[in-house]
Image: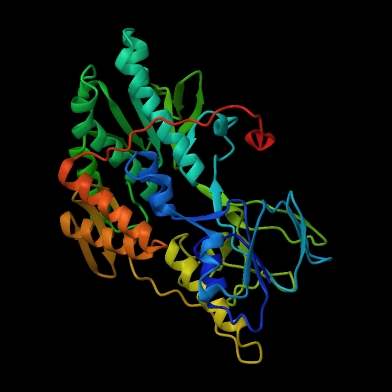
Length: 421
């Protein structure tokens, strides 16, 4: 079995499979597993990247993964006729292929947008965003030109989903608690954090109470939330919206949408469906392909309850990975159809500010924030990571300072081709 992607879905499948029946190869473009819910904390200097990352090869030492191997590579082409997966380094043959590569940024066809905005869909993207935010603050602290200074200190977050709300809240905390102390030449009122959402509410996928509480929390952190604003273009450091309004800024953080990671397929006419997600049946088998499965964010399983597919969240990925492992570990038995057990959703806005929806139960404020903290700590891989993240959070909680605002850029030379890919 070849599993493409070492995220929540792929790793949970590899862990729970009967390795006496399967030789498992996990392929990923990075040599570590990341924790996407906390990318925004890396981007806002709340956590160091190593705290939310765990090396695949160390994980494979665990007894739960005996029978699994890891190959680093970016899967670019899949030949379903020859049953081969090709990366930039090698060609792997498979009996069963599982697509668990997740999603990437969706720029909705806006020309050249990906070249000019900052994103937080991976650890490298989060590091880059962190560096650019710190760069703007350092340059603004020295800048005497009023217009340039205003542009440097204007941070626009596009997208009012969980990622957008969380990074906007983190920047709001930076404005409210940190700027006056660590950047004395900058008046906190000069820094603008603007969250732009194309619909009439933030956290629209959650309940109306969560949406209202999130909006209140962002306002308390001095974040300017602008609803019903659709971005049309970003060029020459100016955002233009569909209503004709503009915002001049050096920093646009894009969290407005996702799309499935693309692959080039040979030997079949089957193509991904809506959102570049692979259409699967109730057993996560890709429709139209033999011995190919898709799980997690990249899978599109439509049911009566979820006519547009399941939400692209960690719980779906974990449960689909576990269900597929159960089915493939008992090939002679009757496979079990996947049924999502929704355990609720949550998002944090900042210190003592979070929202949680669990069925009919709604939590907000400090209690919700602690619930969010516990759930995320328990989901992280590795006891060391959990301990380090917990200590960082407690330090920040009592001192109002993350202490990780380090502007570290990689040296340019020796030159490597993959920097252009």
